[in-house]
Image (cartoon, rainbow, N blue to C red; front, side, top):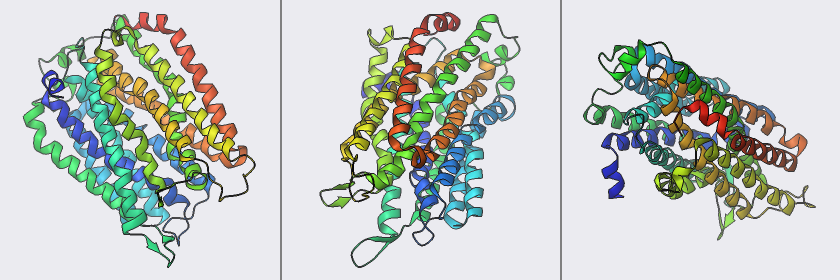
Length: 453
């Protein structure tokens, strides 16, 4: 690990921990959101039907990734990345607190609105700052984003575990037999709010020391900098083609995330009802399964970070890496088909549960797919985007998750109507085909990337 620290600036680790706490906040809330929406009032939820709840979940998680387009543009043009990160962090902290303190549909929509706005300021700008730590041709950049991605997923790993303890144990009420009568979901939102506070304190105390002037001003005001010089130039043909590649990759990735984000909706609901969650006599809270993917990310990201800088890893171009990621996502859903098949003949028996390993294997393969696609995508956007549009193009990249989560919400809303087998098999087949198409298009895509791989 010491070797990695020598290779990368300390500022990377500040951004790592800042992002970790923001993801702790977001994934802590996300881990219980669909359950909070669908459980009855008596159980500590809002009593919204599954179809409507899936659509609310989809639109919320979608718009969380739409507003970065606006936040990235505002940072590039007016306020700079550092201020945007602080504005976003504080807004999200307040949003989580609203979810904790106002347990009504009004409180729900106000809290979610604040989270959407806050994430728009925060998300594109912290990723852009990571890219700005390195020169455009620096071979460490893919590795840096894999390390940064560990921060994202360390927060995502810890949050559902901590929030699950508060919602399903410490603040849950039980009957004499030990069965949960009321869940303490609101206290999960409080923990998420506190996590966001930690992240902002850390960032604002240490940013000046480790980042210097990076991100303090919008690109056009960083006088004498590369950003200032580039902002005054018209876009060249090469730059326009590179920006086109960002849009092409984004179009493919929409369908990766639409499948991947079933983790918080249809997979979570299926786990709650039909997966045997009892291990050694302990029933695992449904929200804890949101930690399985980030656990695998934290475990395997260092291997990917090393592999992409190895002689073999350097031979894989971005389209191939991302195509492989989509194929792996599809393969992961085959294990959920195994879970559905295990319950075949017992569909009406809610007490008959599928083996937990089907779910774990799904998350494991999905994680490998995510590691092949997502950190690489973040890195390539910072390589391809012209300096003056750096945060805006990161917002475009995150736009894939906006469309994906809305599509994913609609898909999840049809699980009860069409059946889990139909939904999971359709997603699997579709993303595998798209992954193969991306790999086949690698030559024209690489040509438009003009030397960026």
